[in-house]
Length: 191
Image (cartoon, rainbow, N blue to C red):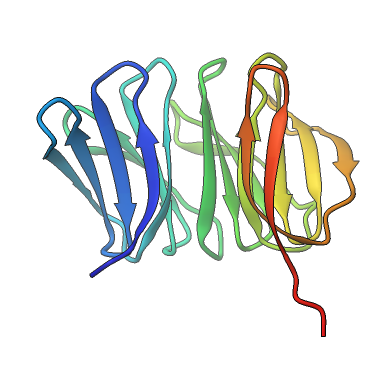
């Protein structure tokens, strides 16, 4: 049995997407409780998913060090966003440009032009693998989390804004509410 590593639920369609160690992404129709589409192309386990907020686009990231952009309706691969050297662990899709942000265990964050499938910039401020990304619901900012830091960035060009200190563990998950970001982490065991 292969583990499910990521889930994404559409705000615009009755669909849920699942990412798995079996190298696949599946689209589930929530009204019929059936798999209606498969997305194949990753060369290794798929760990992260993001849905574009206004386009029928799905982005998946995996252990093959790339993110793949899919037409959610046809299951066709639109772009391969390559250039990371380790697992793409977290993704953000935003509609302002449109843009994709990838966070990788290679300690980098890449900002991508979604229409062209080309990188805009690579952010190298983290010293440990980036496991979590989240965009702010009202500001044009996002946050990244790793074992070494929690950082805030301006979204369009990736300008570094601020470090947040206080965690002494790996940040695995970030989430947002209408008022603020939330942080989930795993503490390191001290010996």
